[in-house]
Picture 1 (cartoon, rainbow, N blue to C red):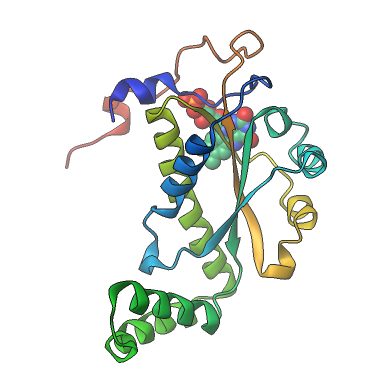
Picture 2 (tube, protein in one colour):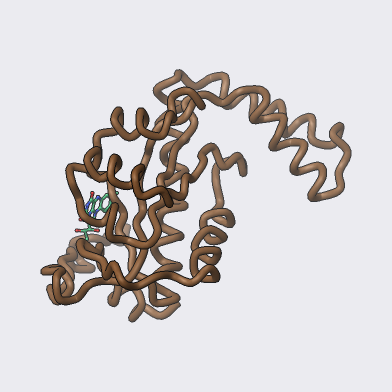
Length: 209
Ligand SMILES: Cc1cc2nc3c(=O)[nH]c(=O)nc-3n(C[C@H](O)[C@H](O)[C@H](O)COP(=O)(O)O)c2cc1C
């Protein structure tokens, strides 16, 4: 990853509606999310790829009419779990045993550790913890998009209750955490395209102790 890639990217406001990502690019972005590290490896979230035009139109309303939702070629809604059930934990243990060719008994202590950790959290703490995991995946996807020359926008500007309702997230013990749109910038329409980046100086941001 060259720093030039990170300097090139910006949070795109207007996308080129005539430009489409290749299947390979879409898979690459999804793989970068799948490969993202998460606390205890639990990946306590699900990502919805919105392809329905009608759903995109509804989501745009829930996102305070932000144009990226209907203009970007790819729309990903990160939804984090509001509960961590035994089934979820068992699933992770079973997956680990299968992939690493281990006996379930070898993973007993790991499983008890996860259950112990999760059971001590209040629901608010758990929701905060699961949603934090989605931001790591978001960061990885944004960086990976930049690295392969694709534009993206992290989006927190939405009415969560409305997004949850549109995608029936609460019924699945999920809630919308963050949205990522991906596509190609429309340089002519996007006033942000030519503006320099605003960042704190190195001195203001870092301190050596
Ligand atoms: C968590 C998060 C939420 C954001 N939400 C929105 C949003 O809803 N709409 C938008 O246009 N930009 C959104 N942004 C983009 C930021 O405004 C942008 O990243 C910031 O101003 C820095 O500029 P740059 O990313 O273009 O370098 C969001 C960024 C982050 C990290």
